[in-house]
Length: 292
Image (cartoon, rainbow, N blue to C red; front, side):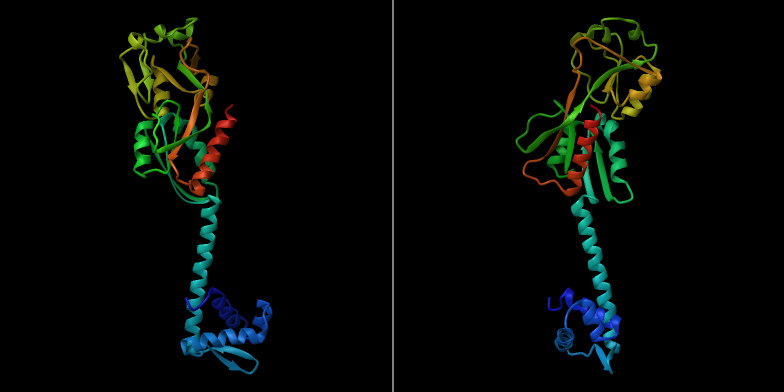
């Protein structure tokens, strides 16, 4: 490109100041250097941009049109630079990420609070599906990354994973549920009652009750558990307020669920996360750390 942004900036400064000397002082260059720069521009396009009047200048008719276009171009470049800065900082852009239902119930609202502050210009597209379904979406470039609970997906050479934190699971039932009055609960006790889950419930052999509610929305599951004899495993933090208020009760079942489950990040091997993705990863790690 023969015309530099520097030349256009000089052109606009001369037009605004109405004088080569005042413009040169503002630009911290010598007046002869500025005059040569404008003259070279006029020579390049074989037109006179300024009328030299005494000690000042005024745009010619065609010069006024050139100046108007230069103003539009520089404004576009300022917008471009601002947008690039926001993209690089992770404050703008589009992020397509995946979350299984359990993690969506735990993290999505918190991520929303982080990303939709006044300074953010991000578009977040969330796919809430099972681990294997999210893996397929990742392989097909429908999402940039996803988070999952340990053991939800199988090892895959195309995928890089890393732990980002842990969640504390809880087995919950409604207040007044028959199980709340029993002591030393075992898996056999759970087999008497229907199950609520976003995925197939854990294998419990013959102890498993065939009655079950499968739903990928944990807010719906929580409401169903409040009103029935369903048994559900979810995040302890997700139901903390319900347990505190007494609408749900956490039950302890011997050798049933671990005290913690590890949460992982998955992305295609060799892919560099976008700044927006890195921001999301930082927020997820921070939120999971706060739960400890």
